[in-house]
Length: 595
Image 1 (tube, rainbow, N blue to C red):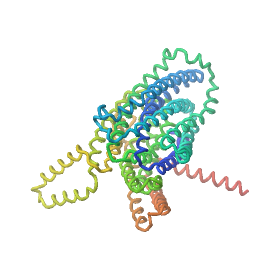
Image 2 (cartoon, rainbow, N blue to C red):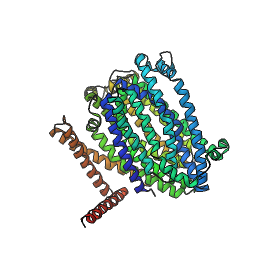
Image 3 (cartoon, helix red, strand yellow):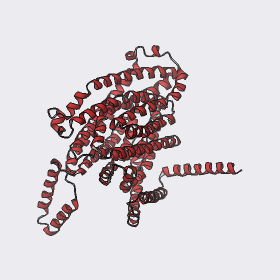
Image 4 (cartoon, helix red, strand yellow):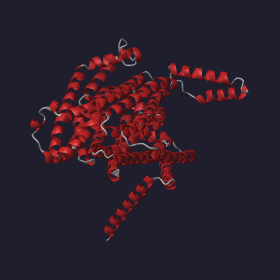
């Protein structure tokens, strides 16, 4: 069974992390707005992020945790420590090699990205978008950012070790300290130090150092239980069968993340061909839509992976199916109401989160536009976090690679065609009214030509770039469609990988549909409540926007819980028991103090 109490405690810390993350982004928005300068910062950090994600992040979930889990249960703590040392030294060395090479060749990389003679320049024509001063800023930011993958890489391995030992609290606490640094340091370095976007890059170095440091004391406590001689433990790295096995499992995941990051780079570069500030608006919206994914999807996936790895090792497919489906249903039950809130209250949420300083009303509209389209991907991304962990636990990372490749293809297709389509978006109601009028007056005779004309116009809009800033919506649609298809393919592959049907109508699909129906009813009610209050309140003032958001959200929460009771959704019973338990503990503490 899924350890729901453990998940809830991790979710609490992840929630705090995201709140601090929004404070961080709000400060960034106040300092820079959705500006060209900030666009350069996001673009420059793309490559350092790729290094960490490709070499470390994917490998940890796909290979390191399952392999370390096997070693702990098969051979004990001393063997666990020896394998941990070998894997950490190996991956840290690889990171250092890549960081050193990229640091030396950063100017050439910057020139390649914007040169009209390069492949990137020929396709995206960035030479007119970035100026000489932008190139200098890009180089300095990227070189500072290249330091962070090393510290984050070490921290990720320490996190993996502690999660194998079922210590999730401190590993979830590490991002809290990272975000605290990213709140304080930009104020010191940018606002008071006058460092500009370079101050943001330096702040990330401080944050990654704290991310590692907060985990070290607990790590040393557990590491000492299986103390080994470090120099002895790292001998014969490439002759160790467990290391070779980890590398084999990590290889498909590395290839997957390379493909995913290629999509990120394509999205980033395409955003530079749009109007100024669109990349920043997309990044702000992306951070908001990741709120439920990082809190709920990550918590469920983190706590579930060691159990799935253990059950896979024991070849207990029946219990594996139970744990997997419980994780899926629990995550869906928690994430769906948040999706409804983000979709209905996107404008006030964006205003409350970022709407101050240099972040103006146009930035709010553009960010909200991206958010509503990204909202469609939240379900897919949450499910994929759990589905991918199932593949990692089953030690079939090649299937995971195939799924990712399918998603990348869908994303690239949508990014090109839908971005062009939305670049003509100003007010489609006029066009739709014209089509409806033509159809209504055609009396059937002219219906064919009307439809043919409309399809030709659609193709033209999808292949020719306009000048509307709403073109950035194509990036959001690409993400949403990619994860939707990935989820369907992932479900299909899970049923083919084992003799047990892990995904079924009764245990998986039907309960999800029931939860979606409940969330849809909640969203419809919230929409009408929002409109009623919106007409009555002066939403030009922050206090009334906050009141509108809170009241509508409270109504949505009550509606969702009531619907859960009426639809007899199983997860509601846990929420009820958990709430009753909290209330009971609160009463005991109050009465003790009064006594």
